[in-house]
Image (cartoon, rainbow, N blue to C red; front, side, top):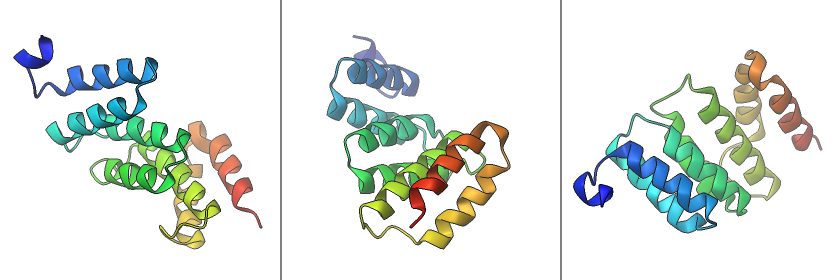
Amino acid sequence: LAVMKSPSDRYLRLFMGDAFAKGGEDELAVRTWREAAEHNRSWPVPLIRASQVLLEQGRFEAAHDGAAAAVRPARDNFAAQITLARAWARCLEAGLHVGNDADLMSRLDALEANQSTKIEVAQLRATLLP
């Protein structure tokens, strides 16, 4: 009923996506989060959540694309940046061509300056070692 009254309410769609994900309805959650992002293109949270689910599903390119879209309007958002780095690293590990190692390493260098992402950055770097 609430969605019918406010179909473009981005927060409602975000919370609906969360509920779908908790209920194991990942595809519906991803679709709902993407709809939330469409209603406010400068808000990275729904795309970050969708990318995280896509990563868990092993859909690395789709996760990378979603995370890249989340970063565009929110370059200073560390959650978006680290989600993009995670997806990028998984793509590289899987042999998918979404960028190169040097570009990812530059992104990780920038993320390393933030104390809250240091451990995760170190873990990502370790996964990329030959």
